[in-house]
Image (cartoon, rainbow, N blue to C red; front, side):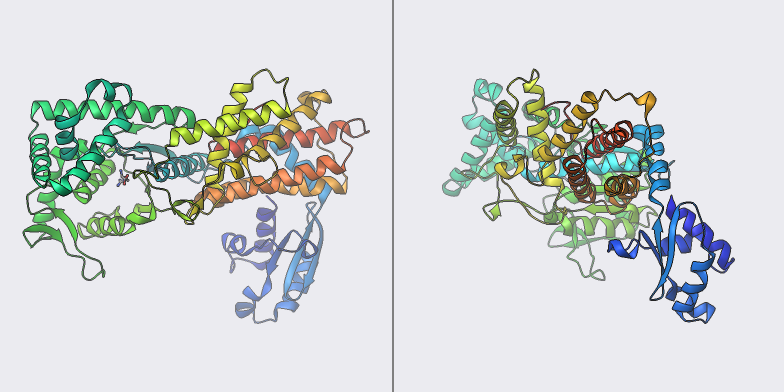
Length: 560
Ligand code: ARG
C-alpha cells in the first residue's frame, strides 16, 4: 500500500514524464533498517531532469508528505522513507481483520488460465522422489496462481504408455502371479519387470517377446489391453493413497495412452508444414538452427514416442483450455525434451508456443547421491510418509501426552514436514533427504511453523480473545517487526508466483515465525493493559501463517 502511495505522490510531483507504474517499479526496500522502510533512487531521474541525484533527493524530500510517512530523508542520492509505525500498524491489522484469508490475494491473474502438468508418475513403477517433488512443487505453484486470481487446471499426465509395457506384459505372461499382483501391485510388477531385464541379458529372445507384446498392445489385442488396464487401475489406486496423504487433488488424470489415436494428426500437421525429415529410417524434426539434436517423432519401426505424445497433448490442452500459461513441473533431466517440444510448436507457428514453460527442479539425494527406484536403493514414498507420521507421533507423545487427536496432528505434522523440506529449497537445487532434519521443532521445518501457530492459538484462548473487540492500536516498538512481516505477505505471494518459486513463501514463513517467537518471548502479551491490542496482532499472525502454510499445501493443526 505504502508503495502505491509513494508512487502516486512522486508522479504528482514529477508530472507526466514519469508514469506512476514506472516509479512504482523503481521503489526499493532497503536492506538495512537504518535506511528506512522504502527508498527511491533519484539517479534514475537525473538523466532526463538534468540534475544531480542528491539535489533531486533534497527537493523531493521536502515535498513528500503523508500520514503514512514518519520521516523522509535525502541520503546519497536516495530518498529514504520511514513509515509511521502507529499508522501503518493500524492500517495493516485492520486490513488483515477485514480481508481474513483473502489477505494476500491478488487480481492480476483474473480471467487467465494456467494449466499445470504435475506429478505424472509411471504405472507399474514405484512413485519416486522425483514425482513427489513434482507433486508438491506443482501443487504449491497452483495454489499461488489461484491466490493471484488465475484459474488453474491441474493435470496428472500418467506415464502409461511406451515399449516398456510390452516387456512388462511379456514378463507377466512368464512369471506373473495374479494373486500376488492383486495384493501388492506395484511391488510385484516392478519385481517381474526387473527380472525380465536381468534374464534378457542371457536370453535375448525375451526382448523379441517384449516387442511382440508391445505390438499387440498397439493393435488393441484384447488380452494385452485387459492386462494393461488392470496394471494401470491397480497402480492408480496405490498412487491415490499417496495423493490422499499429501492432500493433493487433480482436475484431470489423463495418461499418455489417451493420445494414441490422436498422434497421427500431429504427424500429419508436421508433414504438411514440411517439418518431418527422414533420418536413419526414423522421422524427426531437425532443430539445427536452435543448436539442439533433432526431435524424434516416429521411430524406424513406426512407433511413436514420448515427444509425439507431448506435442499432441499440448495442442489438445490448448484447444480445451486456451491457456495463458502451461507449466510443466518436471525434473531437470528432461530439459532438452521440453526445449525440443517448445521449438517444434514454434515451428508449427502456434502462437501460444511461448506460453509453455518447463518448471524444472533438482534431484532428491541421499548421502549425496541420487535416490533411485532401482533395486537395492529403492525408497518407497509411502513408507517415507508413514515413517514421518510415525516419528511425528512419537514427538507429540513426548511433548504433549494429553493431546486428544494425536493421529490427526501426527499426520499433519509428518506430512507437512516432508512437503516443507522440499519447498524451502530453491526448486532448481538438489535436496538432501533426511527425515530427522525434517521433523525437528527447532530447525527450519514445518513443525517449527506449525508449533508457532499452535502457540499463537493457545495464547488467544488463554486471553479469551474476542474478534468483535479486536483493537488494531499498537504503539510499542516491540510489535513493529512482526507488523512489518505481516504487511509483506501479499508481496511475497506475488513474487513467489511470478518466479514460480514456492521457496520464497517458505522462507518468508520461517522469518515470520521467528519474528513471532521473538515477540512471544520478549513481550508480556497476557495481563498487560494492551492485552487486547497485542492479541489482535497475534490473531493476525495466525491468519497469515495458516494461509501461508496452506499455499504450500501444509495443514496447520490446532494443537500438537
Ligand atoms: N511420466 C514422466 C516421467 O516420469 C513425466 C511426465 C512429465 N510430463 C510431461 N508432460 N512430459 O518421467
